[in-house]
Image (cartoon, rainbow, N blue to C red):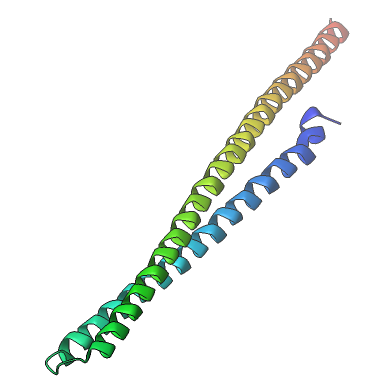
Length: 146
């Protein structure tokens, strides 16, 4: 069994780890996108609510209504801040997953280079062996015909 054949399971294992890491990157990117969408929805809702209240401000608000409006806006702001923290954590998670994938990718590339070098050496050795055999056959034919 050649060295390259012996290394095939290792190469396959390294490649699988790289693919798993890449899938983790894709999943974390999707999670980030989802959380960013939620954040944008909250911001849009707040803006719509404020716009709606501004339009109705032509009619005077009572002190209680004004307090309720401010309380609700404060709650929205708090929710937006919390969602922003979630987005920030998701962004960091993407960065961590990308770094892990890059490490696994470089290991995979290194393993493939090693295997390629070994394969090239094996082919060169095979060629030399073949050439030596052909030289011996030619020498025998020459000796036989002489």
